[in-house]
Amino acid sequence: MTFNEGADLDTSQVTGGGGGVRGGAVIGGGAGGIILLILGLIFQNVTGGTGTNPFDTSQIQPGGSTSTTDFSQCKTGADANRDDTCRIIGTVNSVQAYWREALPADVQRQYQDAKTVIYSGTAQSACGVASNATGPFYCPSDQRVYIDASFFDELTSRFGADGGALAQEYVVAHEYGHHVENLLGILAKGQDGKTGPLSGGVRIELMADCMAGVWAKHASSTKDEDGEALLKPITDDDIKSALSAAAAVGDDHIQEASTGRVNQESWTHGSSESRQKWFMTGYDSGTVNQCDTFATDDL
Image (cartoon, rainbow, N blue to C red; front, top):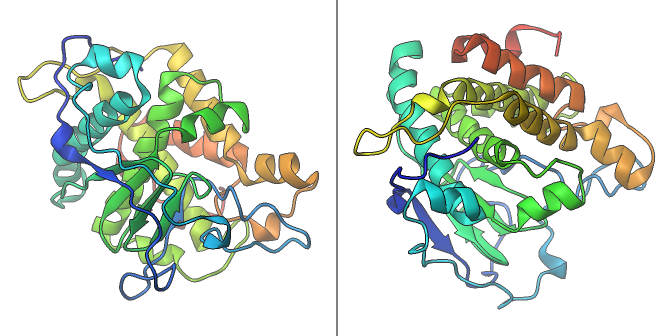
């Protein structure tokens, strides 16, 4: 989706990250601290159908990160249209503006803002080390989203998304879907360690896809602090772009591309078809009340 050129971006909703790898456990940060990834970029490099730890830092060299703290280039919607980092900031602004209004109205729950950490290289989260290898994720232990803006190049070049704006915005909106799940007390349902097409983890991911679709439906009505619309009305091409991203991050697509075979029992995020379906369920309905993936086995 295209930003209105004159809309103001609020950089206070994001922060920089970097500084290399700290010592200690890779996965941690409180009881049940677990990373919820939009992509299992690493776990799909399988040899026997089982996954590897996406937070194995054995190949990450300390000191290889670059802190991203200066967002002075991101002032307006015009900046968001030309720059990936600014597009992340604008999307965070829009997504949070939407949920501040919608969550109390739809489910009588107050929304709490969550910052996004935009980093380059590696960054330390309360859930472990963030890197481009892990992909964007939400950490419930510190209630932050972690994104390396260079990931979007991988989304297109390696996984086949079309590179459109909504393909990138979908990634951000999906991660904030996990934050909403956390606020609603649903996130723990995906932390049972099970895998497969009907597992709790897959249901949590598809629910976040649905929430991304709900936001997309209403995105053009979200406003900056001065009351100006952040985004222009959605187009058919925007929808195609989001669906291309949803297809690109399907477990079956990633497995086929990386190993030449599909093993449903190791799925953690859902098939390309399911991810597209639930994004459109959210978009068509326009309400989080239609995103209950735990109420059906028709995923």
